[in-house]
Length: 296
Image (cartoon, rainbow, N blue to C red; front, side, top):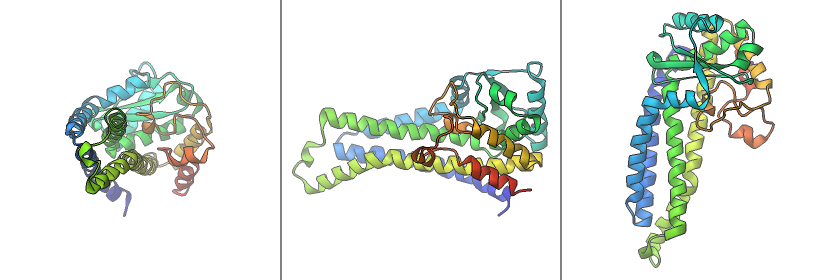
C-alpha cells in the first residue's frame, strides 16, 4: 500500500470512527438508562453528543486556537513563516490556511480547522527562534499534511466525544452516590447481572475511548511525518526539528488536555515515566526520527 492509497483509506476511516464513537456513547447511555431505570442517561447522551459534536465541527478550531493563546498574523508580521506556509500550500495543492503565532518558548506547532478551505496553522515563538529554516519548513509541511489528510476535523470531533464519555461516566458515579441503583433490581438476579455490566461499562468506557483516541492520534502523526517529508523532499529537516522539539523538557505555558493531542510534539514536556509515555497521544520522537531518516 503506497502513501496515497493510505491517505484515501485514512479519509474513509474518519467517517467510520465518528460513527463508532456516536454509537458507543449512545450504547453507553442506553445501558446506563436500563441499569438505573432512568431514561435520563440516554437523553443526556443523545443531547450531549449532538450539541458537542456540532460545536466541535463548527467552532472547534476557534476554541483550540483561543485555548492556546494563538494570535493571527499577516505576511508583514513574519514574512519567513508566511512564505513557508504559502509555498507549501501551493506545493500540496491546498488553500492558504490562516497563520497564527503562539507566544511560548517551547518549540511546537499544530494545525486545526473543519476542512482544508477552513484551516489554520499555529506555531510557537520558541519554534521560530530555535529551529532553522529547513526545520521550520519540515514542521509546517507536517501540519499541512494533517490538513491535506483531513486529520484536523476528525481529531477535534474525537477529542470532544472522548470528553463526552468521561462526562457520562462521572455523571453515573454521582447518580449512584446520591440515588443508588434500581430498586427493582435488588432482589433480581438478572437485574443484578445488568447492574454489574453497567458498573463495568462505567469503568471501561473512558479507557476504551482513550485507547481509540491514542491509536488514532499516533497513527496520524506517523502518516503526517511521511506526508510532510514527501512534500519537502527533505526528511532530515523534519527529523532534526523533531529532535529539537523532543529535547525541550519544559511544558508549554497554555496547556489544555482537550488540545494537547493536536500539537506535533507533546506540549506537556518530556517525560521519562513509563506510564506517561504509554498513554501519550504522541508516538516516541526517537521512533519518528528513525523512520524519517530511513526515507532517505
